Image 1 (cartoon, rainbow, N blue to C red):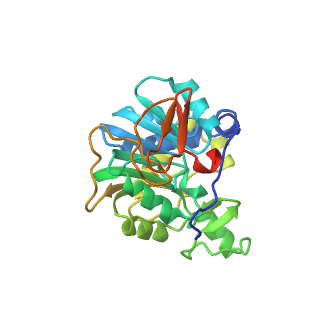
Image 2 (image 1 turned 90 degrees about the vertical axis):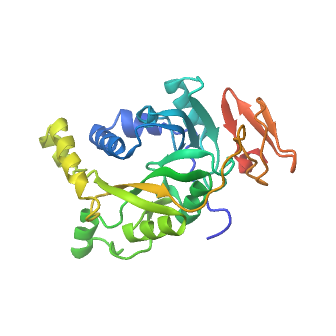
Image 3 (image 1 turned 45 degrees about the vertical axis):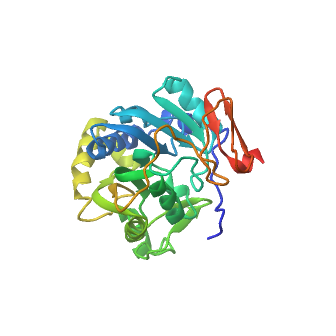
Length: 297
């Protein structure tokens, strides 16, 4: 992979409205809520929500004292801000996942839901996540599963060229990847994570099921099927709870942001943060910190 992988940018998108609010995805949203409830710690201090978008999942992290919502799209964060407000509980950050603007060892929790499937270099993204986590921090990852039953059947019937059993990712649309569970497990291990639990999610993601089975029953059926996740992963979506293991740097008291250009700690001085080493400036516009180096230069 190149040093600067391409970025999937939802700037100006109505993703929350068109994909979630106005589409028939109450089932997907509900079963993801079940999975998160099962995997999330009951409490924590500072959570990093990677790919937060418009804040659909953010209220589900109520056990944490503060939540940092990170997304590359500033307009998505503006939508999240209008939904959640501007109090001390939430910090809104526009940044590149491959160059996180936080000091090492800052967070005791992180989530990445419906986000890693946009990563052309998933191992690099996971390495960045691990760098900002404390030892024993919990990281909840969701990924699109290449080895799902629908893909397997299509492959066996000759309706699909790519092999769902092979380890390499498949890019089914531009910057949209399905990953094999075996690869995800290896990348997590290589980047300092230990898998504690896996849940298979969205088993019944078919229009027919949604039409003939009441939502509550469908969610209950999925909640039961999720419990097979440690045994096998054959659903289109997989959630894993991972523990950050090995030695970790500890963030110094009062430190928070760093310059993604040169990794120097920054003073939090809105409406403008300036790196004393490289001179790069980062604006704070209406409560949203902008660390997108490529957009600013």
